[in-house]
Length: 421
Image (cartoon, rainbow, N blue to C red; front, side):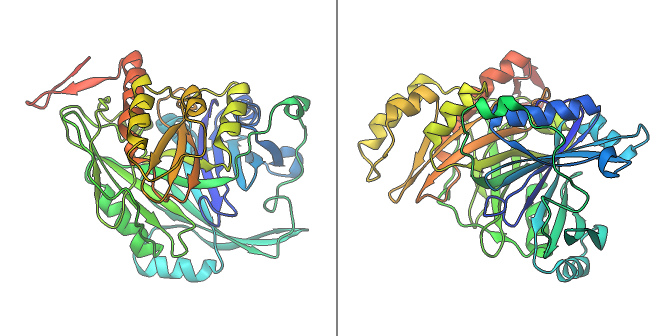
């Protein structure tokens, strides 16, 4: 998010990408930066103000703006006072980023107790917050890096969002004049890890939240001579929450699972090696450790969505021209039939991945803040539960060009030293 201050994206959802997806963006920094962040998501991405918490509502320490589109909610929060160490430290270390991925749950006490028995770090014990619209039980668990999970148990709550939030103070009339973006829900959220931390993080989700390794059609190994990336997708029992967990694997050039990757796996560790030459772990270096790399938002009509988002001024990754030439040839040998016009997909730089049963369409934004860390994805699925493994080569070629422009593209030499290209 193009915002000043540290945004901590809180994803509140009863399934990341399912019916009640929400991502809360906690923005530590100046109040002007917070307003700019919320405004960016509204004007560029089609969200609308949902709820507000601040001095006018009785909150003396934190101000928050919640915005909504479809079943997605982003919440931007910032400290009201200069002495807020938690938000201040997050801002200095990470810049804008995702701090809290929250899940709607049925029994908060039970989940926290089971997580405690398995050794999880409980940041906040279950507690009830309430206002005149009802009550909500909340708890918070520590996951990878400085990322946390808030567990939200709604107890017949009828307010706009959560206790303490009121109706927005202002509605920008410009929003009514902009085209509809048609984003529906969060499809998945990707977390990037440093070397050798992917499997421990996956184990944490399996042990503490009873997630399982999600079977994906992306069950093959991709590789080039240049770089490597590994990823495992974990999901909850209902498979309404899907979270790819990435880490770099050593290649000729350091893989940037930490700059822009979108890898996913299956029941086995799914190793992907891309011709994408990245900086030396750009995401982790600029974010200051592990964290959420990108959020994928589902739409039922990606062509209309991207046309409208580009009309709003949203910037996306471009794709090499050869990609669509190769796609035409490959589709001639495939059983799958793409309903959408390939020419329009090419014009919009929308990627296609497929198998014999179906296909998906996806596109990635450029980083949505000054640091080359968090970015967004728009995805449409047609009977395909993968995550676009076949598109990684093209994606990383595009990322490589951006990284070279930033002066962050390096090659790893056999002796372990690196040099800029």
